[in-house]
Length: 134
Image (cartoon, rainbow, N blue to C red; front, side, top):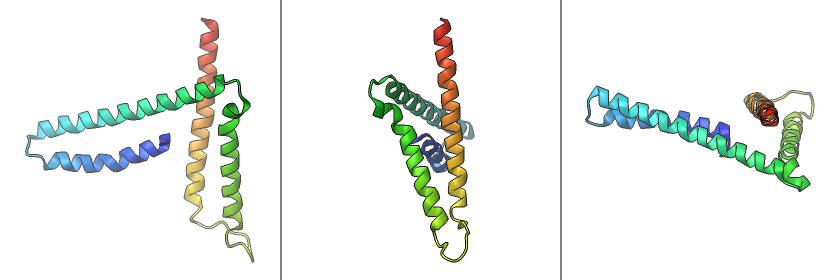
């Protein structure tokens, strides 16, 4: 599951869990404590998942093979290219329009790409510079 999928899962699961906690026959304080603990568990799980992704990326970069080092950029380029081609040519026989259905997908793609690639690369560079100074 990717990072954005985890955030989406948390936002979908949390209201259901809170509703279940509210239905328990406990005091208001106990319900609040239970909700707080559940939120802490979900945040912890998300942080752990992000650490695992970072560990996989580090492992890929340490590989001696060309493919593991380049599989993420190649996949990103392929999927983005295919999505752009499909969204541009979808129903554009007479005139050029991009369907309103593609707009939220473009927004999400841009947010995920910019945040994971550029922030991830910045974090890697900072980590390397700190390691080199030590």
